[in-house]
Length: 316
Image (tube, rainbow, N blue to C red; front, top):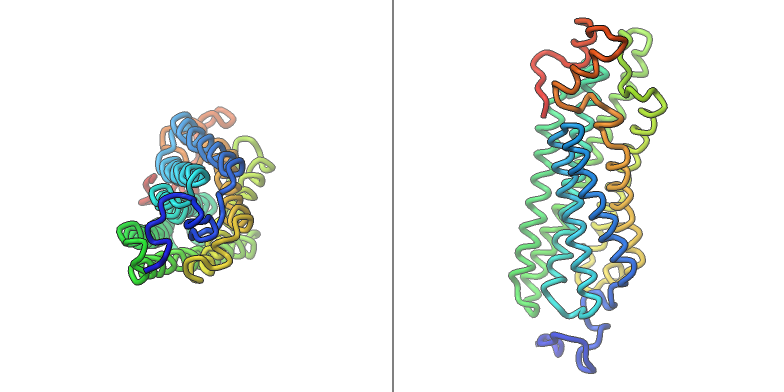
């Protein structure tokens, strides 16, 4: 049995170097993360209500909330790195929460395909939701199962701890693969639009009532948020696959940059570039109709409606 098996607090026999992370989580840095994610959570709820969006702010606000509570766990660990409660909270929530943020990006891609023309995509709009959100949910549940095994295992039961860790690694790896596949389809869709730019019928209504530059800002934010989450997933694979107390897991600066900062950037961009503001096509049906009526005071043409809302499409 390990000499530190019964450690509950820092002492001469239970030094911080013997903990899994080997350090006191930085108090200031983790408090900043708590503040960022808490603000994003509240902002997502407020904006979702204001612009009558449902699915996007729900999954993103839950992701931000999970990050908030996860970093609260790290703040609590600062006073006692041996405390298993905050450790379990932070390791579980900081692993699974980005899956919810990724789901918000998949929903956004679906609506972009609807707006610009499903005929240029290899998948129908609904399939983007069914395939990628479902796969994201599978990755999420896999990580939760792994985290649950770790939480229920005794600190001295290395076999169970490693099993839980390996399952979580599998979930994160699956999430990263799904994101790469989604990125490939998005790039293919963009190239298809470019190749057919002279053939396809021009969309009368701008994607954003704020103008093309505003929509460019929205798209840039979407892409950066996607890459930030993917970067974090790629970092997490070796960080967890190396086992407990490996050098990546014990590098707080690396963690705060490649996990904390990446997810913070994604949450901030997904909140500042909120789709209800910059991409009204994601709003509810009544909101979209109201905006179309306000454009030059005219009713939308049947051609516009066929592009903006293909037959058989229903808002999610």
